[in-house]
Image (cartoon, rainbow, N blue to C red; front, top):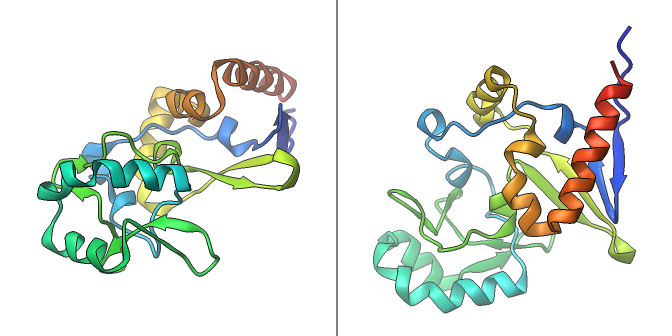
Length: 185
């Protein structure tokens, strides 16, 4: 008999939903063409530091931005506050990120929320952070590819998780995930 996974585990000051460990996932850009940058009702969450970095490179990427993206940035800037008050990248026509170019993201370094996607981060008081898997139908090809390859979501997103939380934290996550999976067998 296989035990169910607990809904969450804690690694340092980070609460990790166990879907991040159990889900198989590997982006398949050939199949989806990066639709997560083109669809949705708001831009990607960004920090004030990320907004400052985007503004520093804006002149460099401006010529590659579409005319409609340039118009949006002229009107409201590189980011705005969404209905929940969270800062997000500006979007064109209700969905396309203004930094989406013909060959992908124009930014030299993606905001961490983009790099981590489909993991979403939520900040709580006292330095506590929560991570959850955002399951979206446009990522079906990634779930299929991850299933074929046997790649857990947290392994596929190693680089952005290390970028955000550090190598030591990531190794703790891997150890906790291995222990959790052994307990459920």
